[in-house]
Length: 579
Image (tube, rainbow, N blue to C red; front, side):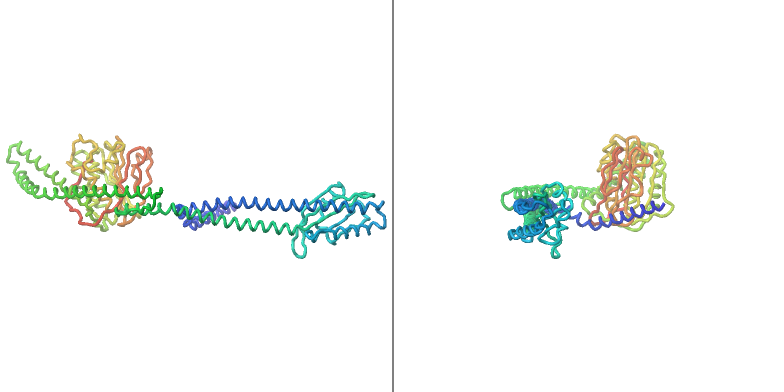
């Protein structure tokens, strides 16, 4: 148990450290992702540092080795000469107990030390007789024990071989490197050992100067390469940034923005091509906007102009319809058909006027805090007679508490009338389920039918104007084909989603999601888009503002957006139930 608690504490602290590290490094990572200039300069700096560092290390190491090899050769030749001189001086003594031998040793050391060049100042000479314990060592300086190691002494005295090594000792409070040569000196009574120790102060100083020069030169070269990379990258990135800013202005609607063309190089060709593309896009957009404006104007004018004759025809038709009982059966039936078609014609005009408001950007949201529970109940009551006529029951699944949201109740009710009417129209006699749910950020309503469903690809078309899944199918309610298109625009005004899912023979489900507070951004829905009885075969896609359709059964989302302010639409639009 203590081990587990310790591991948990370590993991907890590690997660805290990782989160803090990510939070602190977030600006750097953001700059790294967004700045091509920073990435190029950084990569150039790293690559040049590695290259120059490796080359500088090679130069410094090679120079140091050259200096050391030269010192070895020079000291080696001097050692050989000194050994030969010592041999000549000591050969006259036939035995080690010769009383004059110590004097000869001292004289030899003094003579050899005096013959050293000025460059080897501070050199130490020592003659030892490890094979003859009675003969004391003779040295030009007192303390040489730290420079001559036991291994070296054994190699020279016992094995009678040349030996060399580099040792560091403290001289006058400073660390000094010595090149130590050891060589046997043959004599008439055996061999002694001569050790020649030369300080490498000059070589160390030269090596340090070389390393400093290489380091300074390398740093200057890296900085110079970084500056060159920065300047070159800036020359390339600046036109790209200008093109990006110009493209952003073009996407914002400033169609007269152009890039400056300088020179005749590739960047100038890019700017000229970009300007040509922008000019072509401007011409096409202006042309399409003019055509769209004329189309909206035509639709609005025709809808308004038809109001007056429609009102007159409506008055006459109402009079005929009220007196139909006095006519022949054929004439009475004609009066009923005339009344029904006039209702549909009036609904079509009303929908066209509403669509023209959306197209012109004059639709506005009249938000207020409303309870969606009575709105759903009211929609179900109004469509109850239609459901009874086709043998369908509308099942409501509503929470017991009020569901308050800042919405336009008229537009929400119109969306639900269209969705429930569609479900009744295509329900194939099976129940229609209406579910309402909410959380802290969003309110969702799903309308589920078990009818013919949607084929793959039709979920993208169901919100198009005047689109029908089966043109040969007889309508029960005589819709205009604009209901779902208007519902989509109503959902967008709320900043919400209107989504569709369906599969052939498995029915369909529509989901309306609106934020609890007007203006909030939706990130999730309280209800799944795919019904729970079908979720085993097709996973529910993660909700987002604009998402791709899920694999398997057809599903699509119409993302939220807002339109400009203007006059709200009237309240007399009938429900559109044609899919």
